[in-house]
Length: 344
Image (cartoon, rainbow, N blue to C red):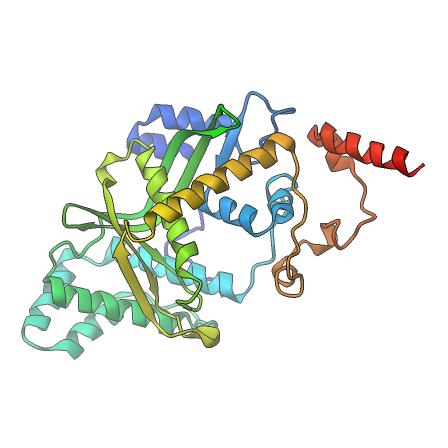
C-alpha cells in the first residue's frame, strides 16, 4: 500500500526549479537534454543522466536501452513500495517537525525523560489509513530513534538538515577520444547536513545492509552527487567533506542489521571518482556508437531481477532489428551484413 503522506506523487519540474533558484543556464541545459540521446537522430540534444540511469547502465546496457529508448518500466514490487513509503515519511518529518517540538524534545532529554521524548517523536508522524504491509513501520521507528539520539547528542546544533530532497542540476563536459562532450546531470539528494567546515551527503536505504562488497559501489553513488554539486551553481552545499548511509532495515533478507555508515569523503573518494569518470566515458561511447548489447553475466542471478526479458534479444534472439536501423548504428549493421557475406 502506498501512503502518499506528502500529497500527490509529483516531483518538482524544471519550472519549479527555475522559480526557486533562477538558474537559467541549468534550465536551458536541462531543456536541451534527453535520456535517449542519439548523435545521429538528435544531434541538437545532449545526454541527460542521473545516478540511477548510470547505475542501470553499469548493471546491464540492454536494460538501460529498454528504459531510456523504449520507455519501458519495470513492475513495482514490495521493495519499491517500502522504499517510497519510508522516504516519503522521512521527507515529511523534516518538513513538518516544528522547532517548538524540537525544543520540547530537548527539554525532555535534558531531564532524562527519554521515553517521553521518544513518544513525542513517534506521535509526530502521521499514520497510514491502513497498516503498512512491508515493514515500513519498523524502519520508520528505527530512523526516528536515530534522529532522537542525534538530537540528544547535538543538543539541536546542526541537527536539522541543510537540504532535504535537494533538487540539483549541473552541466559539465566529458572527454571521449579527445572530444569534450556536454552532458546534463540531475538528481534529488536525500539530505545534506552541515558538518564542521563543510557538508555531508546522507542517503537513506531501505534494503538490507552488507558491508562486504557494498561500500565501494555506495561510495561511487556519493561521488556522483559530489561531482554533480561541484559542477552546479549550488555552492551553498559545498564543500562536501563527508558522506553516509542510513539502513534502518539493514537486517532484512539476511542483512547485517540496522546500520548507519558514515565517513569522510576522502576515504575511497579518489577511487570512486575514477570509477565514475570511467563510467561516464563508457556511457557516452555507448551512445555515440549506439551499441547497448545485453550483459547477462550470471543470468540466473542478474537476469532474474530484470523485467524486460521478453524484450531482450539474449532471451529472444529472433527479435527483429528495427531498433538498430532507427538508431544510426551503421557500423553494427555493416558488420552483420559482412558476417553474412563471409558465411556465403
